[in-house]
Image (cartoon, rainbow, N blue to C red; front, top):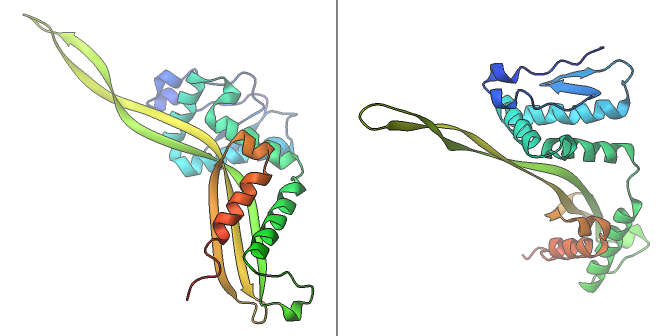
Length: 229
């Protein structure tokens, strides 16, 4: 399309956010509908807007509009929590995954199992169990909505009388959460016999230097393996 529509925020009871809109956006999402400017139709943009579709569905219309509007009033457009999540996932979608993370997790699991007295064997028939693992991260946004008092008009004679009325305040906090899950299967029956997992809020240092937090996560997960009878 040649011109993007914007949600009528004033009609939704949010007149203070009516001007909260980015400059020259290539696309915009309203609930489960994506609008894209003519000539900007790219796979990367569609992925970005699909993140917003999920945000709309997860938060619901009121919380999404409150969180987006409050973030836009406090930050620059790309720094708002919901846009930070969309841009971060867009970058991950457009970039190849880092193979070092998988290799570091594999090495850490092998080292921890060896430290706990198990031995890696090359012959599958001699194995007692098989290890599988999943490691990854995703952007999360915590939304807290709570009532906030506003000063109302004062009137009357003699003296002045007044009242307070209540609106809504929204706090939105964005962060990246890392997840590691380890599954143990019986080598002979191929049935799952144990599952362990851990999550961690990742710092920038964790992301840039993943070896240490991966080792710590593996040690934490495997601390309960093998299960006690």
